[in-house]
Length: 354
Ligand code: NAP
Image (cartoon, rainbow, N blue to C red; front, side, top):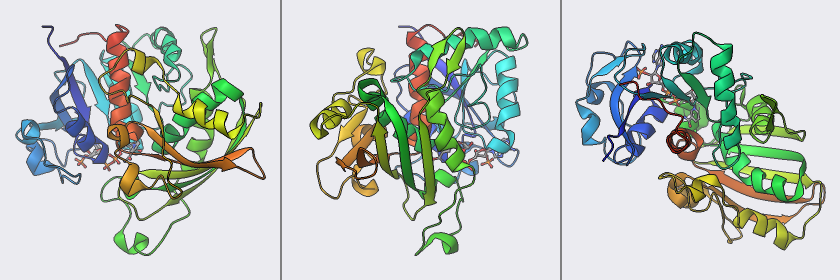
């Protein structure tokens, strides 16, 4: 049997990093070979350095692994990055220059013209940017691929089938975002208990721009952004995991309510055809209850890799309105990057370094 690909995790002790550690524990194609974080953690064992905050125990395989510095001398073929945006840009570039495939959760490179903002269900053809990225940066033996912001991720999985079937004209979305989305220690308890905060720095800009790149077409070596408009209002709420979003949408062709729901429910795409190990069987799951989806009950659907939609109904201002839910640290972060890496394996775009 071929050996597993060796992966490194940058920011391994953080909220997203912990999710990588958990999701990769028994991964059929990848094994965690190296972990890195800040100089506060470097030199310590993972169990000394990491304030494990997700449900389930810290996996045994990682407890005694030594945390290293985020410098490009890790013993692995690719790195997953869960680094803060304050320094992710430079560090990820350094790893790409040193020949690593970098799969990033940070915002820094998402909108670079030659960097794919990859969602395997939607835009695998954007991987054509990798050759252009390497041509543009002669010093980059590896490459950078990004996954979307956590709210964007949940939203675009529902938008993609609607855009294909009916064309999107405009969207209004109100997000209610979980605390784990702010990392650890994140929002102070005295700010969020008994409260909702109607502001998350930079979030509305990300939700308003990233979907247009993701749903854009790859033509003549460039991404032609989708032309619909999005207005977003983002809120932090007192929920642990799972971003809920209230969406109103206007379409170019007006389907019946039944056709609208069927387009979402019947959506399948490349990761499902390729049977990638982390792919949800159904990227969009429709729940029937009048009061669903809800974070506590629906965030684990499809192991946290799907967008759960419900309350689909006609809208008097737009065409339809509905609620959707996505697990922000699974499909909204670590799970998305792992699915991206699985697609790279299938498309023979990963290079062995180690
Ligand atoms: P976090 O909980 O604050 O974790 C940050 C990680 O980065 C920790 O491992 C930390 O190591 C490390 N780090 C901090 N400063 C560093 C430095 N100067 N050098 C090297 N490593 C450093 O943050 P997070 O929520 O996991 O988010 C990580 C990234 O993912 C961010 O860019 C965020 O925007 C993005 N993201 C987060 C989510 C989410 O739901 N949380 C979703 C999508 C995208 P120490 O433990 O040693 O300090």
